[in-house]
Amino acid sequence: MVNAALAAATDPDPATRYTAGTEAIAILPPILQSLAPLQQLGLHLTGQI
Amino acid sequence: MPVALVTGCSSGFGEAIALAFAQHGYQVVATMRKPGSAPPSLKSLAAEKSAAVVIAPLDVTNPGMRKATIDLAIQRFGRIDVLINNAGITARGAFEDTPEDLWRVIFETNLFGPLELIRLVLPVMRQQGAGRIINVTSVAAVLKTPLLAAYAASKHALDTASAALDIETRSFGVRVACLMPGPFKTSLPQNSLDRDASPPYAAISKRFCATFDAMEAKAPED
Image (cartoon, rainbow over all chains, first blue to last red; front, side, top):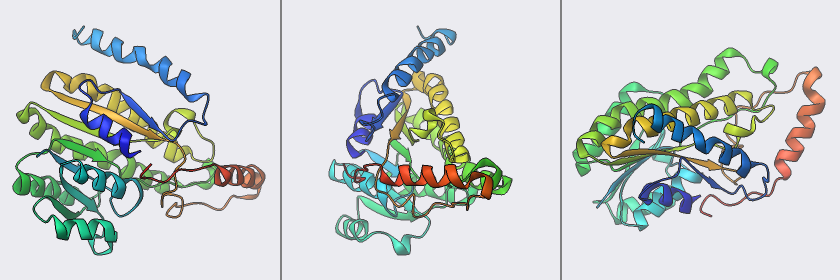
């Protein structure tokens, strides 16, 4: 959790979500991957891409 | 030195994060409702590095305390580079066993308190031309966990607001991200405002609690 917090604070282009301690939750990665295009949509709607 | 403001530092994630950021060269404002009962680790650090670490009182549901905390950080360190909204509460219980007032208590702490801190810190970060807002949510934000409806809904709302804000503020150099922990050994379950299951929900509640409590959990500093 601490490493995730430091990464979120320092990554030049931070991710929308950082997970920690979720290795055993196999259904989580595809759910989060499916949300990623929504950020792109938001950037498109606001003319940022 | 960059400045980090962390809420909910009396134990668990907040304590571990505040210590880690201080060790990584940040000046830290570590907040909690009752600084008198701050963990020994943070008390020692604040005594040892009084110029860089300050422990401050903050109930995130209190508007006056929110404003005072932001003012304190600016007066003390001149800027806020990272806001970590970590303070949170939970309550296990079936929806029918969870009254409206408890839903509102959970949303005040897990959603509205963090959002209002963000509202206060955004002008500071915009003026700086840089800032990072980190909201601690939960896997429950996306997994729609039964018997945690109020908690999961509050974290889902914070996740959604964070994703939208990250798009609104990035042209100012301000980015917003969520930390989404799975099961950890924190004081959150001990402090949970759990409701006893009424008879219709007793069986699934018992099974859920047994499964939940049996999950392998890491330590917050991991």
